[in-house]
Structures are given as structure tokens and as C-alpha cells.
View: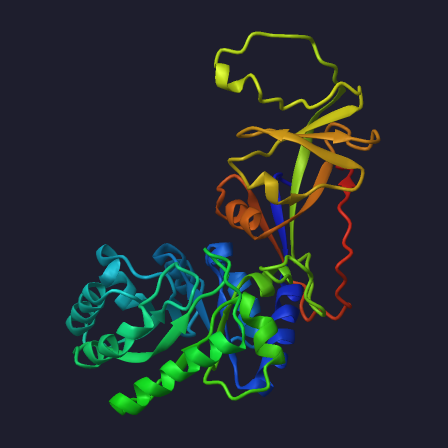
Length: 373
């Protein structure tokens, strides 16, 4: 089989979605599956929907097109503020988009009118993450402007947490956010269908909250795909952390020693040492590099340590001689490594249709070195 490749176990993704949906349902919260980390891969999207998600969300119009081309008929939302230059495509292909700029909403409205449609708008509110969002003090006037614009309808409000600034949602913040939804409805007479309380970082709050909340939707990607809390990186109980496995092939395995001082053309690189020591342990090179994934987000196999990486080489120090030329090595990835690997054209994506998946999730996966046939 070709390498490098990502092996995707759809049953584990379906299980993770179902487990989260079941936990959130008693709190009146639906799950919107975010597929941007997998570039809108239709098979992954289908597993998320089969797990109980009510819709999908994307950040790039090319991924939306891929979902539609793969047969998705569920509502798809554009969760990154649309580009003005793509207003026609967003209005035509997405049921809803998340917005912060009135000029862009006017473009979406014009595009919707031309096609005889009404485009749904969710207004993102700045709640402390300092990424996208309308300031709470400006939200009411903004909502009134949207309600007065033909071609769009105000579907709801949303917030984002723990992405840029790392702000973690708490009960006080979420109560303030819920109050904004109630204030808009009271002042305008409209009904907000969607009060989207955030992303995977909100799961601890959502599952443990017992107070009244207007939040009825979470946009979840990392928790479903990787089974971890994005804030702490800790395994979420009951979820699989190994639905995605990156596999690379060893192309060199030798004992390496320091050949001694050598001239470096760039003085700024004198302090850069890709080969970090002189211990004569076996060093292996794998045919994968920075162009294929974020190597800092790879979990090294047992018995190996990261040495360095260039655009298309990954160098590891092997504590035993298991990494022979031609063998394949498995890596588990964090969210950043997964995103880059899924978008890399030279990394094959191999889907395993293994649902329904019934094995008990375990955080203690073990990377392996595999012999090739």
C-alpha cells in the first residue's frame, strides 16, 4: 500500500459523535460536525452525520463543494466569515453563514435575491477570544440591520472560545452570552433558531452545566475526530483517540556519528543542529516532512525520539533496530498535524468502513513499526 497515507476508521468517528450527542441531548444541545480539519472529506462527514450530528460546518468553500459533490444533503454552514469575493458561492452552497461584517452580509443578501433565495445569517459575538466577533454593545444595532435587509434572515448568534487567545468558557461567560440572545428576541420580536455556544472547548461546560442556558448548538470538530479536549489535550472519557493514523515508510536506517565541524553558509544557522548528539544510536529517515504534516504534532513511536525534520525528511533516533528500510511506522497526530496531512496532496487517504464500531475506547494506543509485504 502507498505511503505516506492516513488510515481513517469511520466507525470510531461515528462512535465519538454518537457518544457526544448522547451526552448533550439532555441539555437540549445539538451537534454541528465541523469537517474543516479533514478538508470536507465526504466519508468522514457521513460518519459524523450517522453518529447523530444535525448538520455540518466548513471554513472553505472548496470543502463545501466537496461535501456537496459527495452527496451531502444536510444543512451546511460556513463558519469562517465569508470573503466578499465568494459571497455568490457561499449564498448558493451554504444554508447559513457566520458573519461579523455588514458589508459582507449585504453582498450575501444581493446574491440570495438574484437566485430567489433567503440566506441564513448567524452573528458571531466577541466573548473574549479576540478572534472574530461583534462587540456585545454593538450586537443589537447589528441585529436590527440584518432584520431590515431583504435576502437574508437572522438565524441566530454564535461565539468562539479557546482558539486565538485561549480563553476558556465558564458559567459566567456563557450566562452573559445566553442573555444576549434573550435581549435580541425581546427587543426585536424575532426568534433565534440557533444559539451556537462554541466549539470542542465548550464540552466540559456543556456537559456539566445545570443552569438555564439558551445554547442549543455546539460546533464540534476536534473532540469528534481526535477524542481530546483542545484546551488541555487530555483524552475525553469514552471517545476514541486513534480514528486517524499517519503511516510513513523508512527510507534510510544507519548508525550516524558527527563528521566534525563543517562550514555553514548562513551564519544564522550555526546554532541549528538537526543531529543533536553523537551517541551512535541508529537513526532512521522516513519519507515524510514539513510539507506533509506538522511534525511537531506527531506522537513518536515507542522506542524512538524525534531528531529533526526538513521539507520531505523526518529523522528519528531509534533506541532499537526495529526501523529497517522499507518498514512502515505509525504515528498519531494532534489537530494541527491532522489538518496539514489531510490537505497534503501526496498523503493518501485510506478509509476503513468499519461501523458499527463496538470496542471500548482506550487512550493508551501504541504506535507501531510494520513490516512491508
